Image 1: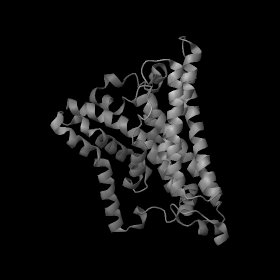
Image 2: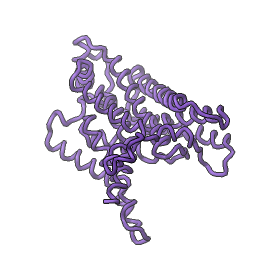
Image 3: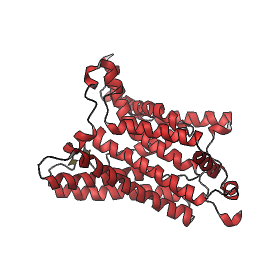
Length: 331
């Protein structure tokens, strides 16, 4: 029981960045844009928040920090960095009609390089002996839990022991699911993703929907990177520490069959599978087994992809125009 109580919060903490990335990518893909640059977007969102927090912490010079500014500055910086990445992707793929796969992969490479460059620069400015940036004061505001969580036993530990960004991620997924299923905007967005030609003929502004949904998706995904650094990693930034979480978020989109509300539970599952190797016996004889455990989320995604392809239900398939650029002149 004690092991289970310690495992669940860690699985949730590990899954929240995946939830943000998955939710953002679902909005993007529903418009027909396949953004494989989500790992780079999350990286830029994380380092942008770190930059804002780093300069704010240094500006107070050991004095008392304003809690509101300590939260808002990193969040606004993260949203701005993610917004610019989304605009870049849309400009290249929607306006210039560049190949979406190549553009996404290039943006991932660019985002990781961007983060490592500015992360390395901040590490030099901090004059530390270790290659990391410690933003513990800012992290304390992001990871603060509800004051009564510790008094509620196992319920508080499992459901109430997280920072506000964790709950914001769940709320974001529920809002996105509601918009896509129950609103006219969601209907138009799904129409653009299924058949932009038909949507355009019906008077729907295809370009606007692709821009807005992709940029909004990038901004949501960027918050996942910020959560990982400020909450899960306790404000510690080190280059290349984000790992393959961005790719897991994209795999999670397939696993959830493009349903944002399912992503809430699936992200916890993937987060648990991602850290499962930490709970198996240690020792040199188990090292190869641990590497196999790390493959489980991807194997599960492949199984789900095979099953949904065999069932061939339309509601379980990706948008029909996913990854295809829209040429209005070809209508």
